[in-house]
Every structure is written in C-alpha cells, then in structure tokens.
Image (cartoon, rainbow, N blue to C red; front, side, top):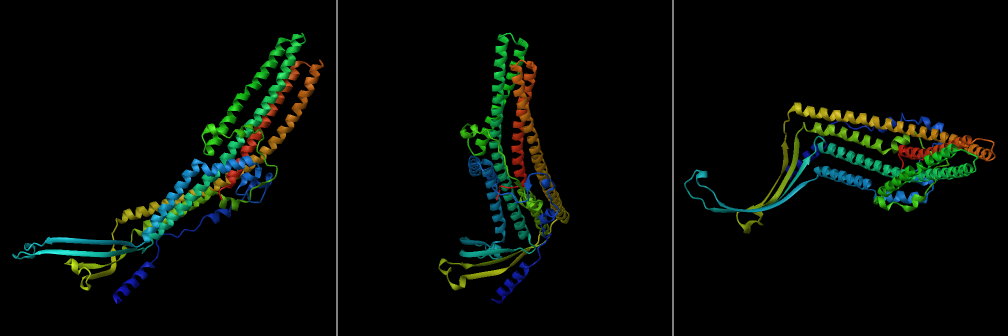
Length: 467
C-alpha cells in the first residue's frame, strides 16, 4: 500500500506541471477602447443601445409574425444550428481525452508447450490458462496538451456560436428587407398607376380637343407617348414586388408559390418617425457577432500553439490492472489467483526537432493571421456602421428635398392644365409639367424605398437581433 500511495503522490505532482504555450489575452477590450461612432452626431440618432428585437420598432404585427416564422423555419438557421451541434460534439470528444480509460477482459487458452523450446526432450503436458481482469489507464496531461486542445476546441465552439448569431441577424435583416422591398414596390406601383391615370386624363382631353380641331395630331401623339412610357414602368415594378414575395416565402421556410398573400397588398414603406437608438462604438463591437467570432478564432489559434509545443515533451500514463489468473477453472476465484499492478508508463517519442519547430512556427503564423483577421473584423464593423449611419442620415435629407419637389411639381401641373384648358398655354407646357411630376413622384418613391433599405442595413451593421 505504501508503494501505491507513493505512486499516487507522484502522479499528483506530475499533474501539476506547467502548461506550455502562450496564455491568451483577450483582444476585444483593446479594440473597444479605440471605438467611436463619428456619424452619430450628424443624424436622427440617440445613444441608447438598439433593442435585440429591433424590428418591433416598426410596430407592424405582420412583420413581427414573418420574422418569427423565419426564425423558426429558415434553412440557413437550421444549417448553422447543425454546425453548432457538431462543434459541441467535437468539444466533448476533446474533453474525453482527460477521462480514465477502462477495459474489462476475460479469456481462456488451451495448448501444449514445446519441450524443445525448453531445451528438453521430455514431452510436456497439455495446459490450460484462465484469466479475467479490469485494466485502468489515465494519461497525465503533463504539459497541457489536452488542456490546450480543450481550450482551442472551446474557443472553436464559441466561434461557431457567434457564426450562428451572424446567421440569426442576417435572416432577420433579410426577412425585414424582403418585406420592405415588397411594400416599397407596392408604393411605387401606386405612384406609377396614379401617374398613368393623370396622363390618361390628359390624353383623353387631348384627343377630344383634336377631334374638335383645337390641337394637332403631334400633340395627341406626344401625350400618348408619355402615357405609354409611364405605363411601361408598371410590369417592372410588379416583377420587383413578386420576386420580393418569393424571397419572403423562402426565408420563412415555404415554397415560393406559398408567399404571404396579404403582403402583396402592402403599399406603405417601412419608416421610423422616432430617433434611431444606435448605442456607442464600444457596445457595438461587443455586440457584433462577426467580431466575436474573429476574436474566438484568435483564442483558438493561440491555444493550438500550446498543443504543438506539447508534442516536444514526453507522455506519461498511469495504469493499473486487477484480476485473477489460474490454470484451472475451479481456481479462478481462489485467493491465490488474485493479481494486481499499478504504475506509470513513460513514453517519450523523440520527434524530428526541425519538424516539431516547423509545426510550432505554423501555429504561431496562424495566430498572427487570426490577429490580423480580428483587427480587420472590428475595423470593418466600425466602417460599415459609420457608412450606414451616414447613408441613412443623408437619405432622409434627400427624401425631404424630393418631397418638396413633388409638392411643387404637382402644383405646377395643376396650373398648367387649367391654363391649357383655358387656352392660355400650349400643350407642350402641360406635357412638360406632367413629365416633371411623374419623374419627381417616381424619384421620391425610389428614395423612400432606398431609405427603408438603408435603415435595415443600419440595424444589421449595429449587430442587433441575436440575443
């Protein structure tokens, strides 16, 4: 028993050896300390953090239901969930490397030993051997190879979790975008059809005046050409609306033909009247899952330096065996058949040092690349957010200017028509006024559509929607 105790004491001492390789220092605080949002002061933004369920800010129950359907049935999310489950299973496998290995065995052998092999001419008798026992082995993680591998695998899982979160926010954003695109196309269709109605009235008036001899065929042809040009925009807008509905169906896990019919009637662009909550740069980088994924990949690569370094050192396994061995089946349970053994097995495979050092250098280079990718991730996150803030703020300015242009063009078209009917202006004035009105209304509708898209891009860059 003293020997067993001493062996256990030695194993405990060995288990406390140093873990080789660099200890990872989180990089995210260093990045967030440098983060600021320059464009926040130049638009309708507030410093409050954006809510995780940011799409509720639109206060649109139909949109809320579509997002819920997408989160429940989207195929990209199912793929990401399966990848996450696989990464967790790999982590469990790596952790199992620190578990005790056990095996139970039983056997019987029957044979005759060669007398010549024993250096005798005497024939030997037949013999029997019965054996049963339990073997136990535990690999001591002397230099932290298993610990570093577990550390790397855990960071891999966290990186895959962050990748799942990226998929999550992307699915939400694409669902909102598809819904917005369908509504924007509906809005632009409404504007185009209204322009067609106005120009049909002008064309009918011109035709009646032509029949009365008050205008020429040239003026009638010009009115008809403008009408058909405006009417030609409708099929394109109908296609935009329908393809957005198809996208919406697939995003929510349905075949394209099963698109939500009620959305086809939407003609109101998604807009927010209140200031947009955007938070600050530090919280942005902590919230962005792509930045977290890059930081976790850096942690994993750092741990793999330790895995490569540990290969330079010996491997020690503490093993034990207990069982019975007897020459007759009846003696297998007797006290004299009992056996046991306990002791460490030291194996040291001397590697090709040049190869081992090369592998360590590879791990260090991979870590340097992961650090550069992390720096690129948080810098890109700031760039995307700054750009999205600027695009949305300037988009608001553009839409406001276009709204004023529409108001003025509508009034000018009304006056031109009245003066034309009174015989005080030529038809060309009416034609130009209505062309300008149709162009201004189409530009406003397009600007409002782009503004809706810019707002979705802004929320996506802010990294909300995965918590």
